Length: 469
Image (cartoon, rainbow, N blue to C red; front, side, top):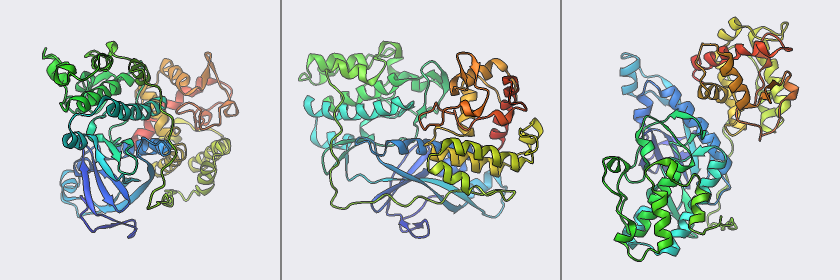
């Protein structure tokens, strides 16, 4: 399914004007003063559609926290649009069944009037060092803010940097393959490479990634701004094709900048500066102050929030949980989560869940609770977040491993100095608590006085996978 010009979304609130671009999994539309991004037809037809859409939604919610950063495109909210299943998806998975509707998640973002750096350089020619470094510093500040929250962009390049027409400020866009990262963790990532700007680790299905991954791409972007030439691709460099020094193309590049570019474009990750700030120091650049907002001749107010999904297969009312999360009452929301889960499972008398009640817990209700936590924590808390962390520390769905659970407890800070927090009242009820720290989980376990029972948590993660969280 691809929307056409003139189609109306959200009961006529937004009208498609044009397609702005397509990527590996996404497609972006212009709707007046906004942009709407969603999964493209190939992703919709994929057998992994549910997982792709969940990841797409979670990443969008994480990016909302940067909506006040001057050099990161503003993400306003998530939308859900009811659409008809396309023929390809029907042929692959429904064997000719008649079309049926499903919900497609969309991101509502700001539309930036301006031009991207790739087109800008093609028109203007090579930039002066002063101008190029100004844009690089601004994008570097944006990446530093992302990295501080554990996110990588993974597709930094001139075409993903727009210069605002109003003030010539650089804005980083297109976070479709942004991913959480852990410095010492080997993870599987979507293989999506832009030759010349992607480092060698992007070409491996599994590889260690960190801030240095975006460092390479930002250096390649500076190389392009000063030479109007795409650097030698990492795949060619792996075949011993040398990187052409940028000063050979543009002899006006200073020694200081040339040295920094070459250092940033080291082939092996461990030889590069390990953070954007480390590299900016090589350029003798300091983090730029946040400029005051520039008034727009066409002020745009953020749209009203989309209604929450409060569906329940057993008639449970989730309005109170939604209201507590929306107002940041994390402790009360944690207690309400315990109450509704026990009631849905029919385990109020026992005060805890056993394996059978977890395995039979309604998926619709589990999704509702999880999506509320993910939304109102900007992607920081929720069962889907906890499941992802469980897998990252070596857990396997449906398999119990106490050592892995200890690692999980250390990551989400349910374990401090090798001691488990026995009661939920010992948790940190703050939006700055560690990723996956909430909701608390003692009601998983069967006992509230011994952490031994917490090993049952792996059953919940398996249920989360079954329910496509």
